[in-house]
Amino acid sequence: MKIGVAFLSISLMLVIFSLQSCQSDRVYSNSIDIQDEKWAYNQVLEFEWNIEDTASLYRLLLVVDHDLSIPFQNIYVRCKTVYPDQTLISASDVSLELLQENGKPYGECSTGANCKLELLLQDKARFPQLGKYKLSIQQNSRVDPYIGLKKIGLQVFKLGQKDQK
Image 1: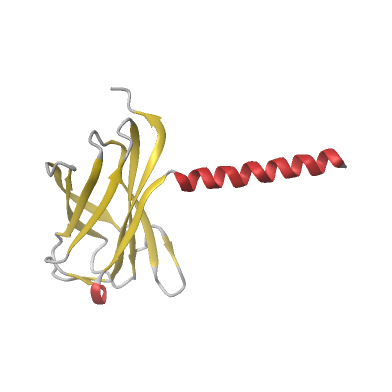
Image 2: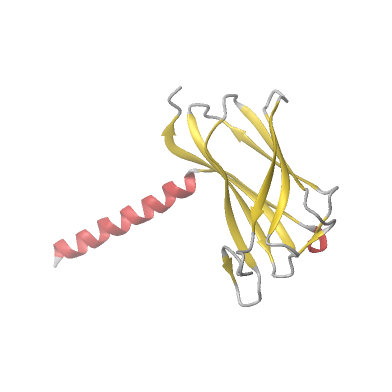
């Protein structure tokens, strides 16, 4: 009986420790509300985070909250990333797929048709400079404004891997 209680206690401590270690891997998390759920071309969303470990690899996730009034199954966005020394390291157009072809939303939706979707923006990203990085996201779709988006968030996680360069 004492062995079972000890085993249960150790198991519980390991679960708590693993949950805490997962949370500590998050370097940055922030979201920006879309005013009146209408994302206009001129509303640029800017995220800034600090990198203190240039040897590690990172995962970047976009978190999109939307309702079912979105006009298309996807939205095109233009992403620009800037190094701490203000060098533009990338500018690319990305299609964020929000709905499947049959109209069913990706991600999790509540009964009120509020949906939350996590999209992998970049995996095993490398940040070679110490300091503050900036990601700017601008909607670049067929309509202005793009309706039905509630907020866009960015999460940056440090992976357990080190860069092999």
